[in-house]
Image (cartoon, rainbow, N blue to C red; front, side):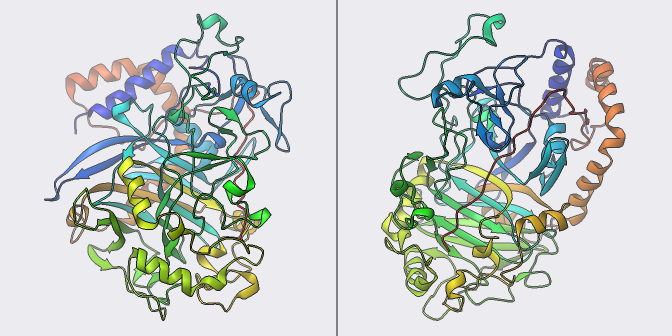
Length: 576
């Protein structure tokens, strides 16, 4: 095949890097960005009602809290967050100065692999569970999709009401306590970027000049979506280091927004969940009540529905549906299709249902109906959600006595979620474990104090399984692959997959084996690109040489003197 345009752009970018190696000092500054970002590419298909699909290019970027956060400047390698999670008092005397003085580090493809065991595959992306680096152990990651039409500087927005979204998933290596999550959240398209361009008059003064201009009171975020800023979800996470362009100094504030989990799971259990929120779009909660902090007994008092309305087959009595050797055989890849159905079948109708269809071995498999007495249905709807909130009310956390258990209905239910889908949501692909609760809410039994309550059994894992430190030691090579993303009219993405060749395990394994060989080929690859890239491009354009497979990327050593890596702290509170 001749070299396509996406590959040419990538190769020309590699040439540019080779030319600029001697002068590379970074891009823009403030809650700012240091070295440039070059994340894994992913193609997503947009399909019409007839099943005809066209490719749209996206690029994945990791969340800002998973990045090195260090002193802004060409030679600024002093970490903003020191060992033990303490903010450096010189760089961060207050939230605004901290945002001005600290930079977010961009990652290259080789660093995505070296630091997070994340790699670009021909059909998608592979995310590793544990990464041992010279700076410590990194666990999991959280990635967002950027839009090619926005030059990869803004998130790709998906408008999915009266649409469906499909993706292939391989969770065959994921044990109890580890969660591969694909979901949508109503983040800001620009990641909360708030700085005007041209803050520095010259490159020479850039690294030692403070930013002193803001857009109104919107903070000091000039890094934006390209560097994974602006995360929010229905749990109102406190773990984000910067919110709204200010340092979250005591991790006291949270970032809240509507969330739709189209797939969460491992090899044992899975769930599809919708979370409604009181406020449209991104909302920064600033006290325990707004954030619904579990530690204060306010889990059911916040501005978002943290529990959500979920369909977990095992929880609904369908113990033989999902797992290794079961109807959906998790020892092999499968497709999860999520359909957002409206009241009148048009884009103008209110959201009525969220349905699930699976595809494996070219066969369409409907989501089974609940076997839980008193709860009917195979899809998320206001009626179904009201029923499970009533039936499962005794799973409420022992210390969470305040507020209505049915937060989903209180915050507007399906209609409210549909409004978020109308405004546009950002795709998140992640892999994580849960030191706070061992993921019992997904694949085990929760709560501890009432294990026989209806709805307490979520999956086949014992309560003592899934302990984070144990799983990290015993399953270091676990991973998830996401691939063949597509969206479009209801039924359109299914047409191209039913009776088609199944998503091959071999393709995913091929990407894994190539990555294992990367260290052996890395030095030769780097030398080849930097010494002969111009000649190669010319030769390819003239002679049409065979395309080099995209996943055989160069592996340039990531060791840089003085780098300090600060993995994100994502410890979730537990409502138990």
